[in-house]
Length: 310
Image (cartoon, rainbow, N blue to C red; front, side, top):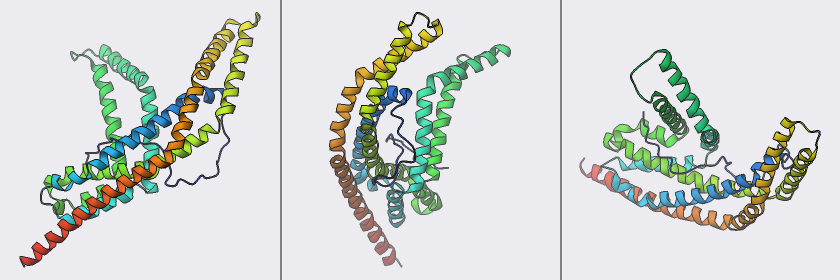
């Protein structure tokens, strides 16, 4: 099975179109838990946009090197693989797969330390019940979980990329020595295509939607902070109630301390996103067209050479 996926792009859940669609759910801006996460969510979207933009730029900068990395493949097949990889990046099937894998990555990233502790604890407990000489079994098991999750995600994304299927179906024409290299190239083309055509436009939609919640979120935090202060000032409030109130006050205060800066930065970035997305799309399209031209020329020359030998 082909498994060389290099996920250099951190990918956001997104749809394949930048037109705003009617929301199927109400804004959670009046919910305190959402409001507490709001500044961090704004910042994360902005960071992700910039990381995806940079990763796409790095990937497209390598396109020109791809043909010379391959050793005498059937160039017409390579050309079709590249076209399929490009198309895959803008398809709903891949986007849905990315949404699913992003959810897994986000969950596992947030809970990784806790999961590691639980896995390590379970393994070490089992080892004590049935003593063995191996050391650090818990750490080894936790690392194995990381690798298994990463591999499963990569395999799942490959299953949704028709370019990888095309490589698998044409391994003889591509050449055994080229299969892994071409698979890595196809991955990067698909991920760069997805970034510039889906992810970057979606990030603009997401940040615009969040900015629409800013004033309500701030009021929600202020109201929650006041409620917590009222409980803390109430001599009749129980100790557990005051413990919860102290946490609520602290979380609301922390969010309020960062919200103005995050909103200001998000507004600045939102004003640049459309132009920067168009620039990234043009760079990608220019690099892709140059690559397709090179491959087409090599395929034509190879066909002529084969015909001359007949």
